[in-house]
Structure formats: structure tokens, C-alpha cells
Length: 321
Image (cartoon, rainbow, N blue to C red; front, side):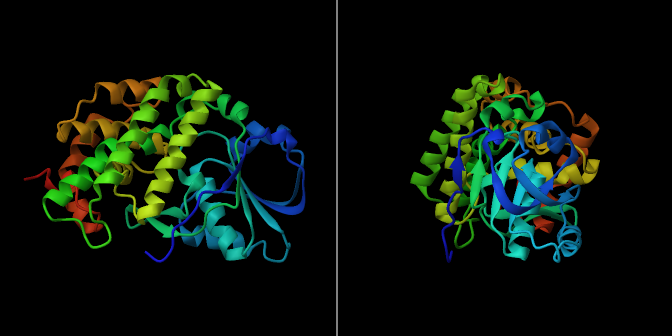
């Protein structure tokens, strides 16, 4: 690890208070922009890029078309895909980035990496942390229920991800740089407890509940920043989500994949899933959108899939033994 990333500066203000005079390159998605554009009249937009894919080739093609327009700043308005693309594009253009989440659907708004899809899996490439994030809790409270607080899955995955990390340690399977650290494991459990406590409030769009969910996302991300990897919160549940998305094709939101995967993997790990399931339901995360035959097929291929993509060791690698 050569550096420790930080979190973005966060302003807790309504989108309607933004007054940006610099020429803006807007990175967004059509549904997100249509939902909030009337509150963002203060943006001096000179060009808009709509994001529909998560590949570097696609992002390179988009950003290459606007190099002669001379934007001075990038604004990302939308969800995790938009944020990941905007981080990549802002690095390529050497411009500052402001992220405006329209739902607390993922932790991508505050990480220093962008998720890309390649060869049937999700890989993370280092990009940058946004310089600024504007958190409008009233806007987030109006987001569609199924994505409004779906980012809880990126914290709840501590339950299964940290279990995998400890499991790998006990089997001598953690590589150099990912050694098991007991105090980090304990801190991750504390963050998990916090997010389970706020699930009901966040799921009903309560401002304090949404702020606590955001706090937990920040704590989870910064904990991983400090140690230089994501083992405390990413394990076999994410591997299953990547593999099942490859089986089903793109379309389901991140939470729709990771949420049910947490419950599935937790059962294999012998964890009590009652409170986990209750919290997912409280945050309106769908847990039955993956057909059972697809679940069964994905479980069959998961050990080989995990090996093929060199994913850190977890229970997914042992399911066929």
C-alpha cells in the first residue's frame, strides 16, 4: 500500500442551493436527471454525458468527444454507475469532480475506485475520490423505495465478507497485504451493528436514518482505505452477485444482487440471517428477484468462477467440496 485514500468533502445542502459558475460537464443517467433537474438550475452545463455501460472503452469513447469543449469541472448526478464513470472521466480530463447522489444505493460515491465489467466479472480500477459530495437528504428521501437505501447492502456485506476474511486467515489463505487484523474485524462488526440499527428509519426515508446509513457507508469505506483492501466488507456475497449477474445479464440494480447474496452466503457460513433479512426488507431491497434455477446454477459454478477470476479466498471457493 503506497497511499491511504480519504473521503470526499461533504456538504449537507439542498441541490437547489448549488450555484456553479464554472463550465460543467454533466455525467448522469436519464432517470436520475429527470428526477432532479428542476432543482439543479444553478449548474452551468455545457455538455451532458448519459452513462449506460461500465467499461473503460465505452467511457473513453464518451470523454473523447468533449475534449474541445473546455469544461472546468465534472458533476455526477445519479447512482453508482454514474459515479464510477465520472470518477474515471474526471481523471482522464484532469478535472475536479462533484458527486450528487440521487439515492443511497451504493458506496461508490465515496470510494477511490471505479467498478468495470470485464470477462464476465467486476473489477475495480483505481481512479479518484470526488473532491466534493453534496448530500441532499430530502432528495434522497424521494428516491424510488427499492434504491433509496439499497446501499445498506454494501455495509451489511460485512457480515459475510468479514467472516470470509477470518475463514481465509484460519486456513492460511490470505495473501500478503490482506492479513487478518482483529481490531479491524471488530470495528467492522461495530459498523455492521450501526447499519442494522438504522435500517428501519433509513428504509422509510427518515432524514436521521438516511444520515446514519451514509455515516456507516463512510465508516466502512474509510476502514478499508486505512488497510488498503476491502476484505472486511467484500467476500463470497459479492462473488455470487458478480457471477449471477453474468448468468442473468445486466439489468438488476446492485442491491438486488448483493442483498439476496448476503442471505444465501450467510446460511452457508452458519450465520443467523433473521436480522439481516429484516433489515433488507426494511430498506425495501428485493430479495426474490433472482430465479431459483439461476441461483442453483450460479452456486454450481461459483467455486470455479472464484478461482478463475482470482478472487480472494472465501467460502465460495469451498462450496463444491
